[in-house]
Structure formats: C-alpha cells, structure tokens
Image (cartoon, rainbow, N blue to C red; front, side, top):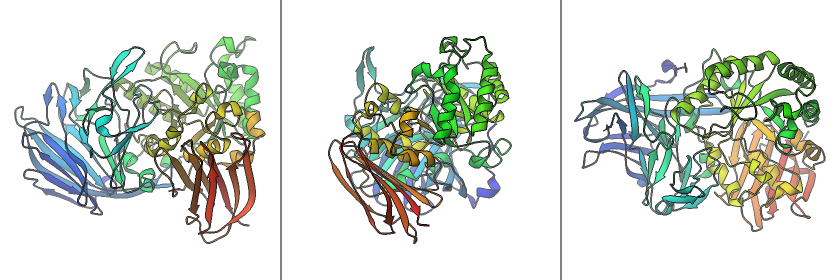
Length: 640
C-alpha cells in the first residue's frame, strides 16, 4: 500500500467557499490562475491563464462511468482549499524538490443520475493538475474521460506517436495540423500522441501536457482533433476498464513555464505522487541500498553473444577499469545456447559466483528478464508467483537490481503489474529498470527503487540506424522533463557515431538524466577514448541543473550541471549546420576553476580536441564552434 502525505506537515490553511457557477483558483505566487465552470450547454470546462495571457482556452473535463458522462449537466458545490509547502530529497536534475501549491476539492453533482463526485485540483506557480474522485462500491467500468486541452492556434506542439513502447521520434507541428491518421505496413491507424507533449507559445514560454501518479488505471494517450483541441484517450483499453470501489484517476497535468530553465527544473509531476513508504525507504530517494551508478551492458554491441559465461568476469573487470558501479547482464543469460551451462553448471550457482566476484571488484550485478512468457528461453513475469520466485533467487544470489523488458502496453493490468513488480523488488531490496515501457508519471517519488526507465527513442537504435539530429535536441525539453531516461549515451566507435560527433555523444551523458547510466559501446574503446577520465568520474545524480543560453527545442541543448563543487557542461547541436555557441559562466561561485574542454575537431566525426587546465572564473565567456551534429563538453573543478 502506498503511503499517504502526512497532513500535519503540509496543511497550512483549510476553508470552504461556494463557487456559485464557477470556481477560480490562483497559484501561491498569484501569477497562474485556473477556472472550472459549466459552459452554456452544461458541460464542465476548465481554462488556464498567466496574468491576462490565455494559456489554455475553455476545455472539457469529465469522466464516464458505467456509460454516464459525469461532466455533462452538472452543478457545482463547495470548494475546500488547503496549501502544501514542503521540500524533500530528490534524485534527478537537482538534489531537492519543492512542493508548494494550493489544493482544491470541488464538489460536483451530476443532475440526471444524482451522482456526487469531486474534482481535485492543484495549482502550482508553474503548473495546474486535476483528477477525478468518484465515491462508490462494487465494480464499475470507466468508459473514458472528456479531459482535453484547447491550445492556442499559433502554438507549436512537439510530439511523438509511438504509444506502444514510447520509442517514437519527436516532431513539431501546429496543433491543428497534427495528422489524424497515419499509414503503416499494417494499414491506416488513428494517430495517438504519447505524452508528454511540449507546446511552444508564440508569445514566449511553453506548456507541457502529461499525466502523473498513474496507478490502478489505464494509461492516457492524447488524440488530435484537427483543431487546437487535444483529447485524452485510453488507446490500450478502448472498451473501458473496471475499477472496484472508489474511482480515483491519475492527475491530468499542464506545466506552464516562462522559459526552458523552469521547464527542465519543474517538480510538478513528481509532486503529484505520494511520498515513499518509510518502512521500505527509510531515507526516501537517498535510501542506502538504492545505489545509483554507471554500468556496462553485456548485450548492446555484442548481441546475445555477450551473455556467454566465459565473458562475464571479463565484463566485471572492464567495469572496474572504467570505475563503473554495475554490470548489466542483459538478454541471453538464461539460454544454454549462450554457454552459461555448457559444462553442466547450475544457473543460479553460477550467478552467485558472478555476484561474489563482482563484489570483490566493487561491481554490482543487475539482471535482465522479460516480462511476457516465451522471450529468450525464460519464463515470463506475468504471474505474481513467478515475480516472487525470481526476486527471491536474485536476493539469495546477491543481485543488486533487475531490468524488466517488453511491456509494450499501458492497459490497466500492465500498469498494475508495474507497481507490483516495483513493490516486490523493494521488499527484496532490488532496484528496477523498466524497458519496453510507457512514459514516467512521477512514480519514482513513491518507488525510488525504480532507478531508470526506457519509454524513449534512445540510442539502441544507433546500432542499426541513426536518430534525427532534431530528436537529440528535442528530448531534453520533452520526454526527459517527466523523468529519468535510459538513453544509452556516448558511443565512441566511428561506425556508431552516424550523423553525430564524438563530442555530441559525450554531451548526451551529461544532458540525459538517469541514475543508472549504461555505457553502450565496447569497453576497449572507452579505455582508449580521450573521454576516459570523464567517463570514469561522471556523476549520475545532480545537485543543480542550469539550462544555458542558446538552448532551443529541437535545435540546441546546453546544460550546466553541478555535483558537489564540480560542474559539467554538455552542449549538443541538433542541426546540420555549424553553430557558434557561447555563454557566460555566471553559474560559478567566487573561486577559480580549472576546466578540461572537449571540442569537435578534425577528422570529423571522431576528432576531439582536448584542452586541460583552462582557467575559468565567474562571468568568463565559454565558447565553442559546434560541427553539424556536434557538441562541446567542459569539466570544471575548483583550482586547488
């Protein structure tokens, strides 16, 4: 059972007001306001403003239960209001999250059926979220929602359309121009957008639309309409889904910020999730058995050949040489075809031997497993008893974490499986990495043992294709905003650089947030790389993140990130043109820093010019000429 927010710690005020024909909500700082009201036809709608600027035009709200749309023909009752003001340790783009918002519970009565229910709304200075609470008993069917967003017609939407495993390429269009259908090898299908979508506003600033706290409910996709309206849909449960007892939807979230710095640093999504159970996580995100770090992968450039038993201790040795905290033993290890049991050995005894060897080298073992039945010669994890057996054996063998793969859906039963797997893993003190997965929805606050997640078009695709440059520069301001991403950064071999340079590849490891960072290339090439010292030292948990000047969605991403007293800069060029980039080092403290600089150099794309001991002070201007698909990296440490 998920823990509840301690009310005594967060309630600052509680009062009841009568909304009459509509309820107006204002953020704690007063800049953002939302309104919920019935429209002239009796349909429940909401809107969002910052000052006089309209961010979301009147858009429908409502939930359909047992065939009845509870958002039509309604009257509004009282609103209870309280405030939350708290801070908590975080593991992501910064070390501490801030949760400051006004919480509203608006009573709603459906006229025809007489059903009384609530809209719960939270208004932050950088976003608005609402969800539906429908009291009741027994099993009822949620048929869908009327939840929608009517975007300004002159805005630009960044979106991707893969809602199976969320591995789509981000592209940009006006909301009314997003196609309603797309042709595939299997025919013509309705287009659904996989959240999050990021909306660039013509007058400055941006929005991000997604959901948060997805538990016990079907995952939300978004359906374009050919107008400015984007509609919530439940693509994987088109016939509806059953819920027993009270119905509580996930939060429907709109982040609203003036700039990219505020977007990347928003806490809205994880703030909407419950804090972790202190019995499982006594120190929350900082609980000691959760060990962030870097890893090598036995599969990525080796395929299943990397699962051969005689290579496993070699992999551990390479991890130790690269100062990686983990080895990910990926697909193939369960199969006799890959040599684990060629001499008649016992699978789990062999795994325990590997864990013990890794422990002596300071390398923890993380183990891959398929979720469905029949993948890679192993049993699946669709049955709870199979999950318990696997995690129990992992704990006995000394495994530190698991990677579970091939969910490829977010229908309600799969969403429930995610939580059950994460809970069981926590009970066995195992971290968990979901692949073939849906988008994050802030659940890592509740379950901090989720160490990373795929749900992104990442660099596994580089093994057989290239990623569009625009995609590299869009991800930090779209998918990566909502949670950690197993992006597989930093290829170094020429054949994997494709349309990028080595410096861009190194920059992706700084820009892509993941507290379990997997290096995808061959260990020998990392050991021979000009980036070796940085690869051996790179943090995966950050104290502070600053989006630097020049950043623009889909064109350029420039981040400065601090861990302790050192700074790490990553800049990537998402265009096929040369770019002159510069930014003042205003983020530095008063002391002098010595920087190691890595720049694009001939021969492209492998060439890297390295400068060491470059003095930098606060206010100095950092400059780089970025090659097409190029990058720049700086590692700044205080001068001794």
